[in-house]
Structures are given as structure tokens and as C-alpha cells.
Image (tube, rainbow, N blue to C red; front, side):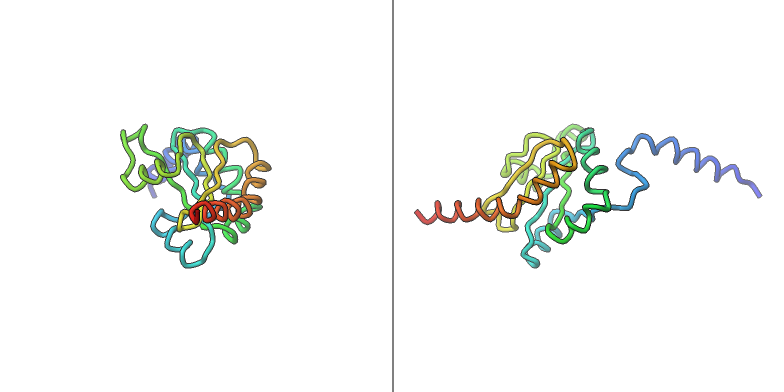
Length: 162
């Protein structure tokens, strides 16, 4: 039996693996939804969206994903409280984003990566965190985000009444 093709495949897989640090052997982590699926699920469930704006070239984005979104310690908490959606900026690689991605990034004023944005599907108000420093800071942001979002929505509604 010729085992050469198997060894070639294994060698190729191992040579590519270091180039993709986000493809770790850790559990799959948070199940990110697509944009349309996420908004639909958020409307149906009433949960706020957790929009994770990221870019392939962004080391802090990969660190956030590995340290936080793939950590079994946080997956259940995120899935219970939010509808997670990953939005990948492709401007560096392709020169532009899909129109719906660019429109969302413009409307939410995303200018740096990673950016976490917590918003309800109706988009009345949002709370934002830009950058990644630690698990603790991210956990603190998400733990407080729902309360901050409710306060921001209330303030926006009151302002719209006047």
C-alpha cells in the first residue's frame, strides 16, 4: 500500500496550520451567525446582537477570537445572552467590502479592529468596545453591555419624543 499521498497531505496540512492561528484545535467556540441570520434570530429571540468586526490581517482580532470566543469558559455565556455575528472587513484584501457590510460599518462608525458592538435588531442605540486588551476587559464590557444598551435606548427614545 502506497502511503506517500497520505504523508504529503499531512505535511501540507502541518505547513499551513501555523499560517492560520485562528484555526486552533480548541473547541469550536462561539457559533457566529451570518449578518441576515443574526438579525433574524435577534428579532425572533429579543436578544441583543453581538457584532464582532474583525479583519484577517488583524493580530488583536485573532487574539480576541482565540482567547475569548473559542474559550469554553465564555461560549455558553455569550450564546445565552447574545446573538453573535462575525463581520469581516475585506478592504485590504479585495479593495472593498460587500455593500451591506460597508453600510453597517459606516452606520455604526467602525474605524478600528477588533470592534465589539452590542445592539438590538431595531438599532435604536448601541454600545461599543474597540480593541482588545484582555479577557477580563472583554468580559466586563459584555457583562455591562446589556444594561448600558438599555440605558442608551431609553435616552434615545426620550430624545426622539421631544
